[in-house]
Length: 127
Image 1 (cartoon, rainbow, N blue to C red):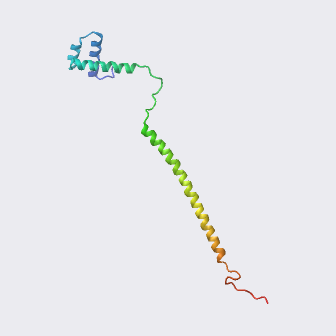
Image 2: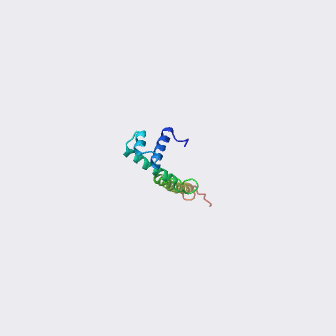
Image 3: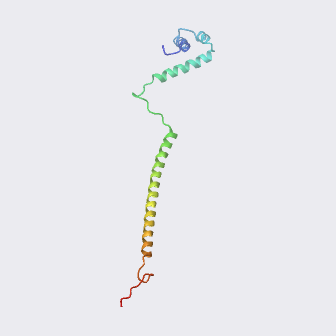
């Protein structure tokens, strides 16, 4: 019990002595500076804490406590990342389609702009 503070150690010993019959409850309460009612409450809380500490537990590290908000945010983040990736793909496809359309339009304009017979080009008379 070296890791327990001195004042707490004394209170624990008083409660243990009163529980085992080594000291009257009224005397233990008086030494702690509390009423008998408060002494009994502290005693019950101490015994309950000791019982909880002595319950068998599974071996190994305890699992992480569930945090519903964090879990929700992580799931939402994953969903939004997938959606963002899909939207980037769609934008890239549209950019490629637009670029192809512009290049096609440039090619069509060049073909239409060439001088040929009947389009302002000079005809050579062969005859």
